Image 1 (cartoon, rainbow, N blue to C red):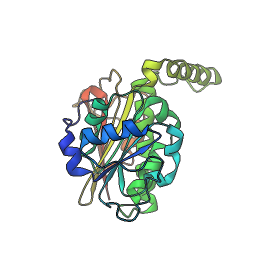
Image 2 (cartoon, rainbow, N blue to C red):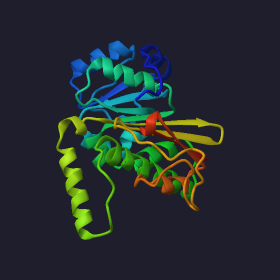
Image 3 (cartoon, rainbow, N blue to C red):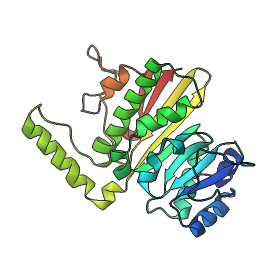
Image 4 (cartoon, rainbow, N blue to C red):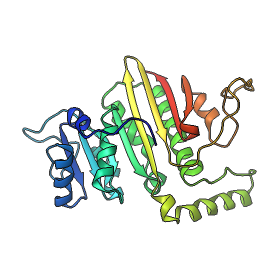
Length: 262
């Protein structure tokens, strides 16, 4: 992934505190020192600010995926969620630097993204900061769900789309998905989500660590109902294009940037 250069000082300027969930106290302290952020109490409800706690954005690093399913973890002041996984502190600091450049930021492993309702949680976090109509929130969640699914299945796991609408095709697809998830190197790959808001415009980037894919030639005419420059590849691009104001494929197809009107 090559979105923005990492910077621990940038994290210090963006975030007011570092929260931990499931991290050993010593590691939380070490990471807080590397980032220059005051550590929060491990195990405290990340969304509930206590007396004297800063209300400026907080960064949450978590170790146990089930804990992050609690909607309270996605409430302000937390604005970035990073799964520690098997990353060293230096790599986590790099992610914190990228998180500092976004209004909301998520980095999770493929295994977690495959089971966590990331799109719904991210939209809940967005709605806590910006009023969304039910229709707009639904559109954003739908597009984000498709993009995350693409990143997991076609990007990091490199599973091809179903070849036909038959029971046998579904069984083959499900088995391929399970087999690829069972490979530790693929399950550890990252899915990264970054949201940026400017005025009435929202941009959402979703990136994976797969091999990418080549879209159709930019000048090729798009069939009715399809997104110009995007081949029909089973990646749900047409579905995303039906609700997003625009979309772009970047980093050789490993990143999709969606734009929405708020």
